[in-house]
Length: 266
Image (cartoon, rainbow, N blue to C red; front, side, top):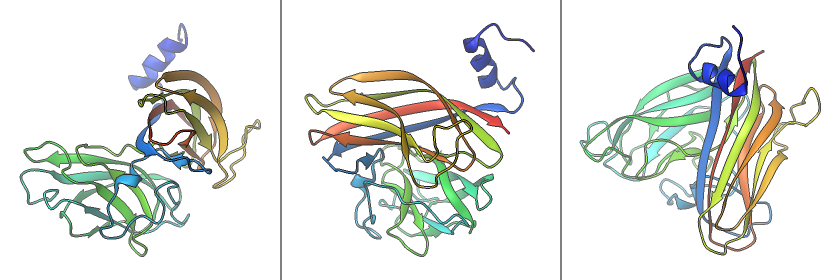
């Protein structure tokens, strides 16, 4: 199969016509960003309440153990319940196991009562999506997933009023390479200067080398009531994590971010 240009190739990937290739993307947002010297990961963890426990950190999302862990899911609202008729009834957890392979598990919510995952080897939470809903069509409370043994280690969440996790952190699965293509970010509050940085824990060498938990900057945007969009050309190896974080110069910035690339079988 031949392609006329880059746009035609990406179209064919999206259509599923290029074996061993698919699109990988990350979406995230955060309001009320503080002037934290080490930056703040772009997720809404600062909106979680103290039930069952406040997150140990809402500015930096912790990493599960490489061997994987059993996790627990809970909502801040009793209406997110498989027996309810209003909120999120069931969710799908997409994750990488201890080997870095892609897996998924469907979970029936039980409102403010914790539900443990059947899986005990969750290495990285990739996504959470609502599968079935009641009359309100969205989650009625913040839904979080955390380490079963340490409830302050919160790894991802679906925010109240939504039906998908907006956490732009993704780990490249085992046996695959991510080719980063493009990213955008926007700041919504007037006169709230903020720098948004796309990061990954791998070097920029050719070939890149994974440096677990050492997140090197890949691109940066300086925003102030503005939107930016940039092309990218980075190769991200298997088991490396791509994430987005913000450094606010003025408190209370509101940031959204989106990145995407092509995931290629090695």
